[in-house]
Image (cartoon, rainbow, N blue to C red; front, side, top):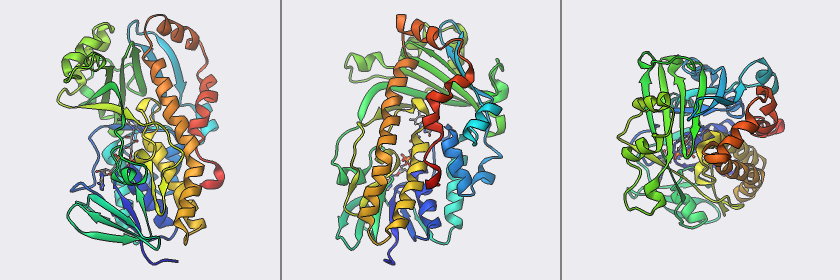
Length: 394
Ligand SMILES: Cc1cc2nc3c(=O)[nH]c(=O)nc-3n(C[C@H](O)[C@H](O)[C@H](O)COP(=O)(O)OP(=O)(O)OC[C@H]3O[C@@H](n4cnc5c(N)ncnc54)[C@H](O)[C@@H]3O)c2cc1C
């Protein structure tokens, strides 16, 4: 077996989970991160049982559980009339069905757990300020040149460098992501600043025509994470500038006053444009492959982007362990195992976004069809997501 390490470009949730998965299979791993430190934005993330199962597999549970919040339910309300239209209870029936919990956690706590595991691992080497700039695949090894001119050679390269991945540009070609015209504003506030505590123990979302607001507690319940999303009217009419806070207020104007009041919890100084890409069947070129958002960026409406990256990491390590001297073969087997599942997430997230953002009669129909269904009757719809990768792979 080659003594060269496996190179990973990108030290986000995908890159660091891949580093642990590969190191646990006995590979030497070198992570090259462009930023000056390994970090995440200061907001929350939801993890389904398909992902918490992976945290447990790699021994991260003790690091994650103390600050994670275990919500009682995921509740969907109408943003106009405030009535509930769907609910999934994370109760005993859910636990029996999916075997692993649904959690919400601060992104920095989650990345910190992976980072600590990498720092402890004797086979993982971490570098910051190493933005990948060029790739050369000679068959016997891959050499990357970083923006500062330093070079690293590995047996193969995994591009976990996100939505605008330079590795993807080399593997598939440079193309801009698909811009949806929907933007997210976020905010985290101390829980004691919240006036209505009805849903403190839930992941709660209010949904209206091209708007939604999602909330859940973080840091063992000390703070509340808020995400407000809307379709930009400026983007729709082709304006050069769009998505400012005045559009946020205008789009939420038809919402119930209690929903509008919660926009106070949102920070107005930064927003995130919702982007994804068309699914592809091939994200491997020679001894270079992609993982996470670099391979299959998805809209957040199923809360599965990072969960998919964790699953990728497990399957990638499994296939490389099967043919360690033939990374190309391993990478083709890995993407074969992953591309339909991740494409299903990408395409279902788009479709679910339309359901969540329905207006007019479509909104009434949604509420009518879903309302009154027993919480565990949704297990069929969500089962394919939360059961995750097959038992044999984990
Ligand atoms: C509003 C919103 C809410 C979301 N909610 C959820 C959720 O609840 N649950 C969930 O599972 N997912 C969620 N996601 C998706 C999730 O955040 C992403 O899928 C996940 O972070 C992708 O991880 P990644 O490591 O593939 O990419 P990234 O997190 O983008 O990491 C890429 C890393 O590569 C580095 N990099 C970039 N260029 C280079 C380079 N040239 N050289 C080296 N390094 C480089 C970056 O600095 C970064 O550290 C959400 C996304 C959004 C936008």
